[in-house]
Length: 192
Ligand code: IMP
Image: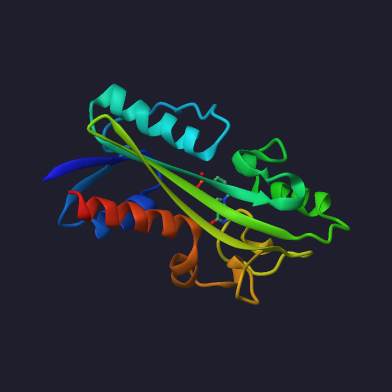
């Protein structure tokens, strides 16, 4: 069976994709291929950063690979935190980052935001990009304990609760990551 690397250290993400591609690909993650490098994410777009990761593996291991990069974009903040989502407050701390967003959004009537994921696949040396977007609004106060990151302040369009109030199954049906991943899986199945 063809091998495909998912440039992540997240075991949970790997297992999910592995299950979806059970009959088509043997999916390996960074740990499986012995890659311990902290791959630099120095680009200024999600697509750029995802491609830095997928290209690193393709170049150093001569294997087909895909990588994802995600973040929250808030219209009134000029699409910030964007690529800086994981360290918006200067530290990799979900609560500090969320508090900074709420401070910057104080008194702001335009609460429109979106989560975005871009997946970069390098196959046979060629790059393919897959995008997933979920639109929504930023709440004034956090609600819910599930999920991670900005989930407690993000209310997806068409719902009256935040991502942090949804079960993982529910979030996985509508999330930016799931949408991008579904596009990748469809592509891989249609063009094995
Ligand atoms: P990553 O590229 O998937 O690691 O996401 C980068 C950062 O974006 C995370 O550290 C979070 O701060 C934020 N983020 C991405 N996806 C989500 C989500 O589904 N919920 C909440 N925050 C997210």
